[in-house]
Length: 294
Image 1 (cartoon, rainbow, N blue to C red):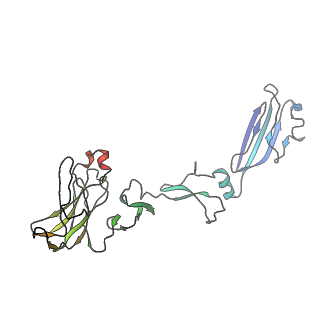
Image 2: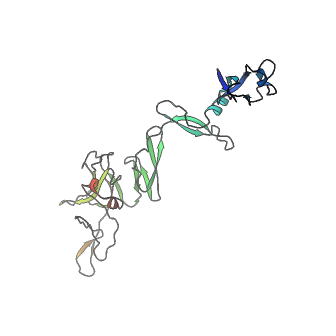
Image 3: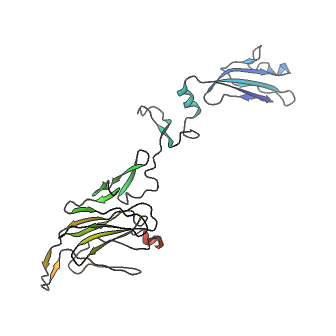
């Protein structure tokens, strides 16, 4: 609870470290005249109300001060004095130091406090461009999602809100080129096909329509294998109508596909683009300019 400090020289001076208060300061010099009129009493003590120092000695005619400091008895006061910030503040494993107002009084100063380290949002982009990761507990997280998006516990991401279609979520896929398929029930078709983490965890998505008329959204995991991904399908009715120009039977929703070094696709005349999706088995080789468009 005590520390002893010592200084000798032409202008010796001492002060207690943070969290300690002066108990006694002594001064001496073989040349007694050096201590005259410098706040040193007849027994060599400098009052605690004054600085523990002696000026105007010399290297050859030196003075010496010794300071005994006592730790503050109030531990909160000691903490506030010795470690007012998180710099150098030590916490247990799995904890980190944060500055907190312990009683929620904005007028009170914040104090360094050890809290559980939150790792749920470290290197986590699962919330996507439409969400912000919010840590929960030690390694958990949730997403604060933009308007028209909602956090889904199964996918762990923000997914679009579509109230007129049925939501189907595929099984989790983990590993390079692993496949997750969200299949619509008979008579329904994929209206929107979605996943999360592209291109950091997913190579993208595409829609399939087999000979039996089964429509599905397919997602493929990427080479990075950052985490498992899931296909998310929004399934609805695809009605048949008569083209007033040709009298041919056409559908309310049409799918178009293009594959090349610079793929591009457009809707047929009379249709507008409702959704554009992407897939490439080689997302790890894509240039940054191309990645930024996904």
